[in-house]
Amino acid sequence: TQLLEQSPQFLSIQEGENLTVYCNSSSVFSSLQWYRQEPGEGPVLLVTVVTGGEVKKLKRLTFQFGDARKDSSLHITAAQPGDTGLYLCAGARAAGNKLTFGGGTRVLVKP
Amino acid sequence: GAVVSQHPSWVICKSGTSVKIECRSLDFQATTMFWYRQFPKQSLMLMATSNEGSKATYEQGVEKDKFLINHASLTLSTLTVTSAHPEDSSFYICSARDAGTGEGGYTFGSGTRLTVV
Image 1 (cartoon, each protein chain N blue to C red):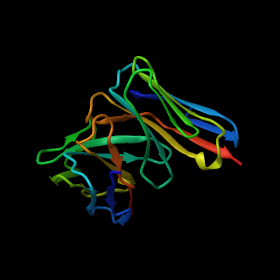
Image 2: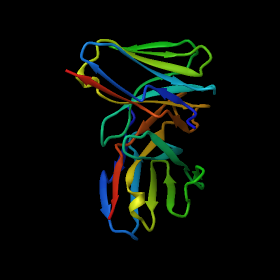
Image 3: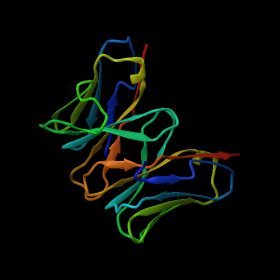
């Protein structure tokens, strides 16, 4: 069983639509990272959230960290084909500790 | 920002041989590095935590004698897949953390595609 449950596993939408990816756990994390990975490459960091209830925006991407620091969401507004990729959430139980990854969400944005 | 260089980006080896993968932190010191493997269409699975100057900590089910990790300096960790077999074929990714940061600070290499024939 994954410590971090990510949903959905796969999402296919049309360009211009919105989408939300969820990352849930029964454990508390000191920080949670969101990454985007292209095929054949390493994950690239999108954002790190550390404070319960925190909301961070990165252009069309909005990240939320749950009040209890057990869950997080990524919302993309007006998705574009360039947003296509594998989105991964990863949590650390304490600063510097190993990251636990969610199962990933494969996003396909069709033009 | 922090950069982690991983080499080689891909390698093909014969069954029974050993392969070494390098992971370097280019502009920061990393007392801890992490090694992951990723199968097609799956997420990253942590194999081991590499600690500078001491033994690596392996995750449950990962054979330490098969996946040798050496972290001899603050900027270099290596993963050697010994006596490789086709089932070891996978995408291996390293990560390093800049200890100078607070929370977060995990940077990933670009990965190594290992194919064992």
